Image 1 (tube, rainbow, N blue to C red):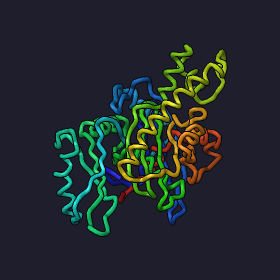
Image 2: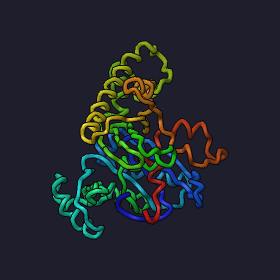
Image 3: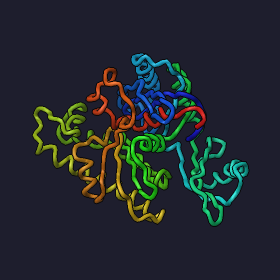
Image 4: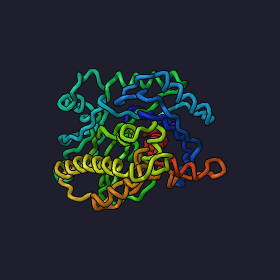
Length: 352
């Protein structure tokens, strides 16, 4: 969607807790995609904070290990960003030609971007055209140039070519669209729960209507469990996924997990209520969860009861052809929720 064109790209999701990599092969003639490679490498705590890379050496090492250990030969990469250096707005523009829009958007952007216009890279996409007036609904995206330079440098030092830079939220949308049927009037909320940030994208059909980040994620559960029950990081990670941890009784963990889930549900409701007020859309028909945080025990069940709509955890490999001799399905199924953004990035190719 943004910032560049390439062919047969390697999808690389550089998250705050881990780097995820996916390579897909386009089978052509509408036959879909085949999985060529995938992998995940954990990052040290606070290697990336709020979308800012704090320990570039650790990130470069993780990327290099993924590419080397999976035998990847495609060094052209699609990656994504989020955080405070990224601005996304839906704006209205008068009817005009594409050439006029390309020029006008640079001037219009200054009203919506809290940075010096020279400090950002701007891109846009027309979402809808009003059939009566010809007025345009435009998706405006701005990313600080120093963030782009940082990611480009990191990838370069890992021996890779940063070809496409997208946004986490729209990469997740790409993965959703190839795996799940889209009905024209259906409104779906995609909720990508990362370690420290949750990306929300609300779609009507295949058109994004609303997007927002919540500064909460799976680490909130982990940190609270560690503090309240005096656990190690790994013990807390296991416990939040419903796994048994020696020395911890279920009745000790349940109230903590339930309280955290209720808090997350309340934060999500605020965003979805704001979506309804600002867009006039009164109904969300389903919620689709992604990201490592989506594996918190009973989270999908609670949110379904809380919002009164179906909630499911996305499998971004659902419609991807997989050779089970090379990629064991039990491993792929267990890790799948982590790879929504990476799969969306791996779909990027020349001409996008």
